[in-house]
Figure 1: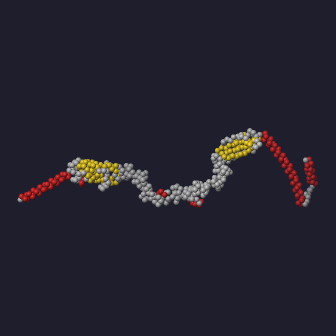
Figure 2: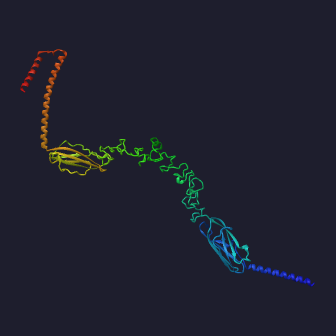
Length: 470
C-alpha cells in the first residue's frame, strides 16, 4: 500500500516538474522575438518611376521583453539581389525600430522581401522574420519624369514612338533591313552584302556605287561620272563613262574640246586646232611668240574717215566710235600726232600728246603745214595694246587753192590733148575701113553724085592747109 502511494507521488512530482519546465520555456521564448509582416514594409512614393530613387522602410517589432539587436536586409525578390547594405537594428522589449534603404528600382512588377536577423537568435521565432510586398515600377526610359505609357517619345531621341523601330533605345530608331539591328549598330544596313563603310548607298540594297556622288547609284544613273554627257554618248565617243576627265588633263569631258588629247582642251578661235599647238590661238594676226596674250583678240581700231588732205587751223575729227574689242572692252584709246622734218623725215616732238580716252571723236588742229604722222593706240581690259599709224599732208588754205588750180589746168590740158588724138584716130580709122573694104571686094567705093566727090576734096584741102599752118 505504501509502495503504491510512493509511485503516485513520484508521478505527480514528475508531472508538475514537466509542466513547470514547459511554462518556463514558453515564458523564455516569448521574451526573445523580433518580427515583421507585409504591413511593416512601406515606400516613400506611391508612384515609382524607373530611374528615380525610392526609400523603402521596414518597421520591426520586438514582441518580447528582452532588448534585442539585429540586422535587416532588403531584397528585390525572394532570391534576388540585395538592395543596399545590412541595416542594424536595436529594439527595446515590446518596442519597435524602423530602418530604410535608398535605392533605384528597375521597371516592372516586383515582390520586395525584407528579412530580420537577431544576433541572439537561439530562441527567436523564425516564422515572422521575413515579409514580402508587391510593388510596380513604371518604365521611364528617357528619365524625363513621364512614364513610358504616357510619353510620346520614350527614349527622347526626337523620333516619336509610333515611328521609332527602337522606342526604348535612344541610340537607334531605324532598322532598314528588318534584322532587329538598328542602323547605327548594323554594319550592313541594307543587307546587300556590302559593308556600309564600302557602300555609297547603304540604305539601297540594289546600289553600292555612286561615282559622281549625286545620290543616284550607278546602276540607275544615266550619267555615272556627272560630266553632263550620258553614259551612252560617252561610249560612242570613246570616253570613259566612269571618269569625268577621260584624258586626265584636269578639264572635265563636258568642257574639254579635245577630251581624248591630254595636251589640248580649248580652242579659243574655233579653228579646230588646240590653243597649245595653235601658232595664233586667238586668230588676231599676231603670232603666239609675239602676242602678249594669245588668248585675247585685242582691241580693233576703226577710224571711220580721215580726209587725205588736211588744212591748217581747221579742226579735224578723228571718229573712233566704231572701235571695239571682240572679246572684252576697250579701256583707253589715245591719239598722238608728230611732224616729219629734215631730210631724213625724222619725227619731231609730239605736238599732240596722247590722252586716255574711251572710243569716241578726237579733234586735231594743225597750226603749220607739212607732213604729219598720226598714231592711234588702244588698250583693252586685259592690257593688250594695238597701234595704228598713218600719215597726212597739211596745207594752208591759200596753197591748197593754188595747188588745186594748177591741178585743174593740168587736167584740162591733158583732156584737150586726148581729144585731139582721139579725133585724128577716128579719121584714120574711117579711111582704113574703106581701104579694107575695097581690098576685100576688089572694087572701088562708088561715088553716087558729084556733090559728095567735091565735098570729099574740100575736106582734104582743109586738112592739108591745117598741117601747113602747124
